[in-house]
Image (cartoon, rainbow, N blue to C red):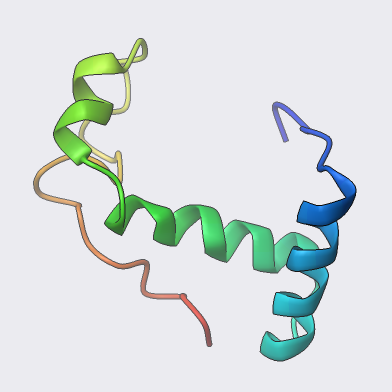
Length: 74
């Protein structure tokens, strides 16, 4: 992993409860949540602010890839 952010106590507690409900580890649950957030943010705003254009073809925010993650909540 390139970057490991620290979670607040409250965010960690929320994540833990979601993980319990999904019967998945917290790390996998966080990955699911982050991937699915792409459906709730303005993808055009994300693209305009992006500073790394090396992966546009595979980016979840690209117009052709903007969809719910297929592994979500399984």
